[in-house]
Image: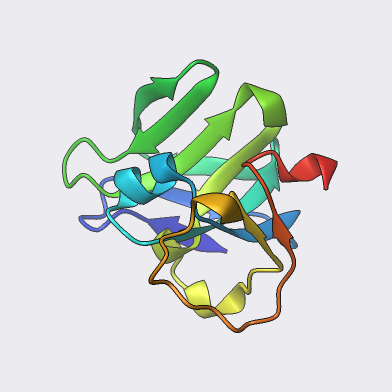
Length: 132
C-alpha cells in the first residue's frame, strides 16, 4: 500500500496487513495535524519503507519523533520509544485511506469536549495502547 505527502516529495510503502489502526485524541497529535483527532496505522519496522525522499524529524517530547515533509509540511509519521519497533503512519497520507478502519480510541481522556463519537470502539487512556 502506498502513501505520500501533499506535494509528493516524500513517498512510502507499507506491507499489508498492518498491526494496528487507531484514532488518537492526544494534544500532541492534534497540534501536529491541526485536527480534532487523527488516525494512524502501526507498522512493524521492516514492513514499511520510504521510497522517495524522507521526512524531516521533529522531536516533540522525550522519546517521541514526528516526521513531516519539509517542503509542504504534511505530517507523515510518529515514533515513540515506548512503542519500539513500530512506525506509526497517518492514514490521511495513504493513497487509499478508506482501506483502514480504526479499532480503538487512544488518549481518549484528552478528546475535545465538543467531539461526539458514536462508533462504539473501545477507548484507552494515554497513547501507549499496547498495554490495553
